[in-house]
Amino acid sequence: MRPFAASASIAILLAAATLAQGASSLILTDGQVIKGTEIKRQGDAYLITMTGGNTVAFPVSLVTEVKLVDDGPQPAPPGFDFSGPKTLAGPAELPSQDVKDQQRVLGPSAQWTKDIIDPTWMPTSAFDPEKDVLAGSRATWSKSAIDTTWTPTSGIDMSKDVFSRSHATWAKSPIDTTWKPTDGFGFKPMKSKRSDEPAPPEPTPWTCAESLFGEGKRSESMSVKPVSGGASASLGVTLYEAQGVIGGRVRKAVFTIADAECRLVGGDADALIGLNLPAEHAMAQDAASFNAAMVSKGGARVPAGVDKIDYALAFVALTDPAVSGITEATLKMIKKPEELRSIVTKASSTCELGRGKRRREERTATASFAAPKLQTGKEGDVVTFLTWSSAGGVISRNTVVLARGGVVSAKRDIVASHIGVHTE
Image (cartoon, rainbow, N blue to C red; front, side, top):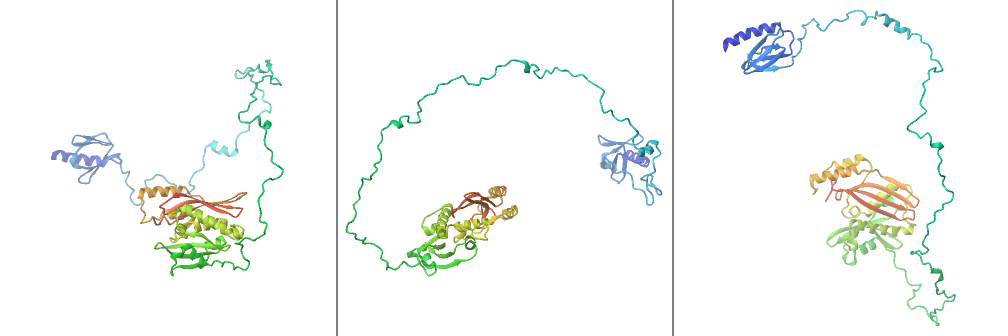
């Protein structure tokens, strides 16, 4: 084995010295690079074909790497350039000496102008197999001006009373024969209201709060204060906020005073009324009470200087028990896609929904975006917009109708839930 390797090394050195560029190469264990035009594996040896056509065998144990693509020619030594001829002085490109190139600047040669009349004539066939050429000469029957067909119809209509005019009916008497006895003595009713009786006292915010929280549930901890800004300013109505205890839990009431009556228009309406109402029914109850309170002012009207979309948002926030109630959830109108994406990207650490279902809700919320829109009709205005509530992370599509008669109504459709940072 050693004599073979020694003789192979001598052949390798001779072949490597004669090779300038090869397509393939072998790298031996001692670092030598053997280049050739083709490499084959045969048993325990590599067969490499040199440029001159000779084939040299190398044991597998002496080869560390096989390269099928050469690295390319070696770089030129410093001061030398093997890239090819270059122009060192004078113009970069010499002018062409070809006669055709020199005459090209003169333009195309002169040509005869085309005759205005085409003297050539090609006969065409008058017979078109796709058309009926005899259609205009054929005799056809013309449609009669009078329809001579007659179809008898039934004279009995089962849906009508054909004898209605011949029925005998009672006519109303021209004189009313009924008689109602009257009091001939002229006594006044015994329960008539005296003019000198004092009028009932006008309700105050405190008395309204006491009546809303019940006679048996008054406590010194009950607080009453006016609502300034927010919904009060946008809706154009004076609102009051009261907090008290019902059933051992603190509740909140938002009310107004109109026509000497206390009107509950927001807050924990279900607990204050004493009914276990769903959120949608509580909103409908608050909306009806708000419209009744605004009757004395000529109906619910958008105040001057207030945008109708802002008015609709304030109405939804007032009547939503989760927003105006004791929980005081955040209600935000979504005006741009960026605002919706900002809410979706913030996950809640206390969400009880699984990650997969939460991702599905986020995709639904993102796909349902629609900018706030105001549609003006003959009978009123319709405002549609999306809102996000921190109570349950609910994305809702709200439709608020501002009727010309001064009545406001709202409808809410839930699009997605468990979105953003929210409470369950």
